[in-house]
Amino acid sequence: MSEQTRKRTLVVAGLMAQDGRVLITQRRADQALPLQWEFPGGKVESGEAPTAALARELTEEIGVTVEVGRIWEVLFHAYPAFDLVMLVYACRIVSGEPRAVEVADVQWVETTRLHEWDILPADRPLVERLVAEGVP
Image (cartoon, rainbow, N blue to C red):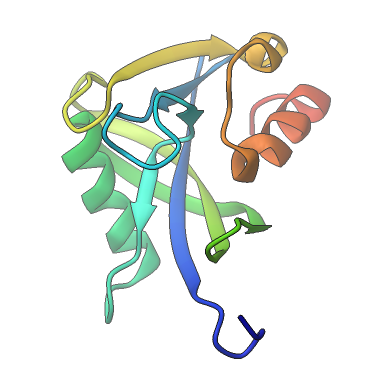
Protein backbone atom coordinates (compact mmCIF):
# COMPACT_ATOMS: atom_id res chain seq x y z
CA MET A 1 0.00 0.00 0.00
CA SER A 2 1.48 3.35 -0.98
CA GLU A 3 1.70 6.27 1.39
CA GLN A 4 -0.96 8.13 -0.62
CA THR A 5 -3.53 5.31 -0.30
CA ARG A 6 -2.76 4.28 3.28
CA LYS A 7 -5.71 5.01 5.54
CA ARG A 8 -5.27 7.70 8.19
CA THR A 9 -7.56 7.80 11.20
CA LEU A 10 -8.00 10.78 13.51
CA VAL A 11 -8.83 9.87 17.10
CA VAL A 12 -9.17 11.81 20.33
CA ALA A 13 -8.35 10.73 23.86
CA GLY A 14 -9.12 12.23 27.23
CA LEU A 15 -6.53 12.51 29.97
CA MET A 16 -8.39 12.62 33.27
CA ALA A 17 -6.43 12.85 36.49
CA GLN A 18 -7.52 12.50 40.10
CA ASP A 19 -5.31 12.30 43.19
CA GLY A 20 -2.16 11.57 41.13
CA ARG A 21 -3.91 8.82 39.16
CA VAL A 22 -5.13 8.75 35.57
CA LEU A 23 -8.12 6.98 34.06
CA ILE A 24 -7.55 4.16 31.56
CA THR A 25 -10.05 1.86 29.91
CA GLN A 26 -9.83 -1.72 28.70
CA ARG A 27 -10.91 -2.60 25.17
CA ARG A 28 -13.64 -5.20 24.79
CA ALA A 29 -12.80 -8.76 23.73
CA ASP A 30 -14.70 -8.28 20.44
CA GLN A 31 -12.62 -5.25 19.36
CA ALA A 32 -9.33 -5.03 17.51
CA LEU A 33 -6.42 -5.27 19.97
CA PRO A 34 -8.72 -7.01 22.47
CA LEU A 35 -8.45 -6.44 26.22
CA GLN A 36 -5.56 -4.01 25.94
CA TRP A 37 -5.71 -0.78 27.92
CA GLU A 38 -5.89 2.74 26.53
CA PHE A 39 -6.73 6.29 27.40
CA PRO A 40 -10.48 6.69 26.77
CA GLY A 41 -11.76 8.30 23.59
CA GLY A 42 -12.42 7.32 20.02
CA LYS A 43 -12.72 8.27 16.37
CA VAL A 44 -13.63 11.71 15.13
CA GLU A 45 -16.56 11.37 12.72
CA SER A 46 -16.68 13.24 9.42
CA GLY A 47 -17.59 16.89 10.01
CA GLU A 48 -17.26 16.57 13.80
CA ALA A 49 -15.04 18.88 15.85
CA PRO A 50 -12.41 16.91 17.82
CA THR A 51 -13.56 18.37 21.15
CA ALA A 52 -17.18 17.45 20.42
CA ALA A 53 -16.08 13.94 19.39
CA LEU A 54 -14.21 13.51 22.66
CA ALA A 55 -17.13 14.68 24.79
CA ARG A 56 -19.45 12.31 22.87
CA GLU A 57 -17.08 9.33 23.10
CA LEU A 58 -16.53 9.73 26.85
CA THR A 59 -20.29 9.87 27.47
CA GLU A 60 -20.87 6.79 25.28
CA GLU A 61 -17.93 4.73 26.54
CA ILE A 62 -17.71 5.52 30.25
CA GLY A 63 -20.85 7.48 31.13
CA VAL A 64 -19.31 10.80 32.12
CA THR A 65 -19.73 14.41 31.06
CA VAL A 66 -16.43 16.24 30.76
CA GLU A 67 -15.06 19.70 30.30
CA VAL A 68 -12.54 19.32 27.47
CA GLY A 69 -9.45 21.41 28.13
CA ARG A 70 -6.35 22.10 26.09
CA ILE A 71 -4.49 19.66 23.89
CA TRP A 72 -1.82 18.00 26.04
CA GLU A 73 -0.21 15.84 23.36
CA VAL A 74 -0.41 14.97 19.66
CA LEU A 75 0.70 11.46 18.74
CA PHE A 76 1.25 9.48 15.56
CA HIS A 77 1.42 5.69 15.37
CA ALA A 78 1.68 3.47 12.30
CA TYR A 79 -0.38 0.34 12.89
CA PRO A 80 -0.04 -2.40 10.24
CA ALA A 81 -3.38 -1.53 8.57
CA PHE A 82 -3.59 2.25 9.09
CA ASP A 83 -1.89 5.38 10.42
CA LEU A 84 -3.30 6.83 13.62
CA VAL A 85 -3.17 10.50 14.58
CA MET A 86 -4.28 11.09 18.16
CA LEU A 87 -5.14 14.40 19.82
CA VAL A 88 -4.94 14.03 23.60
CA TYR A 89 -6.84 16.58 25.66
CA ALA A 90 -6.68 17.28 29.37
CA CYS A 91 -10.25 16.77 30.64
CA ARG A 92 -12.15 17.32 33.85
CA ILE A 93 -15.13 15.19 34.77
CA VAL A 94 -18.08 17.46 35.56
CA SER A 95 -20.75 14.80 36.10
CA GLY A 96 -21.00 11.05 36.38
CA GLU A 97 -18.68 8.40 37.75
CA PRO A 98 -16.56 6.51 35.18
CA ARG A 99 -17.99 3.06 34.55
CA ALA A 100 -17.67 0.40 31.85
CA VAL A 101 -20.48 1.19 29.39
CA GLU A 102 -18.92 0.40 25.99
CA VAL A 103 -15.57 -0.78 27.33
CA ALA A 104 -14.57 -3.92 29.24
CA ASP A 105 -13.28 -2.12 32.35
CA VAL A 106 -12.12 1.23 33.76
CA GLN A 107 -9.32 1.83 36.26
CA TRP A 108 -7.73 4.79 38.01
CA VAL A 109 -3.99 4.06 37.95
CA GLU A 110 -1.04 5.83 39.57
CA THR A 111 1.18 7.22 36.84
CA THR A 112 4.21 5.42 38.30
CA ARG A 113 2.39 2.08 37.83
CA LEU A 114 1.19 2.57 34.24
CA HIS A 115 4.10 0.45 32.95
CA GLU A 116 2.48 -2.56 34.63
CA TRP A 117 -0.57 -2.37 32.33
CA ASP A 118 -0.86 -3.76 28.78
CA ILE A 119 -1.24 -0.35 27.13
CA LEU A 120 -1.90 -0.01 23.40
CA PRO A 121 1.22 0.81 21.35
CA ALA A 122 -0.20 4.18 20.24
CA ASP A 123 -0.77 5.20 23.88
CA ARG A 124 2.66 4.22 25.23
CA PRO A 125 4.27 7.65 24.59
CA LEU A 126 1.62 9.08 26.92
CA VAL A 127 2.71 6.64 29.61
CA GLU A 128 6.32 7.75 29.18
CA ARG A 129 5.40 11.42 29.43
CA LEU A 130 3.16 10.91 32.44
CA VAL A 131 5.86 8.96 34.26
CA ALA A 132 8.44 11.66 33.47
CA GLU A 133 6.29 14.75 34.09
CA GLY A 134 3.34 13.65 36.21
CA VAL A 135 -0.26 14.59 35.53
CA PRO A 136 -1.06 17.95 33.90
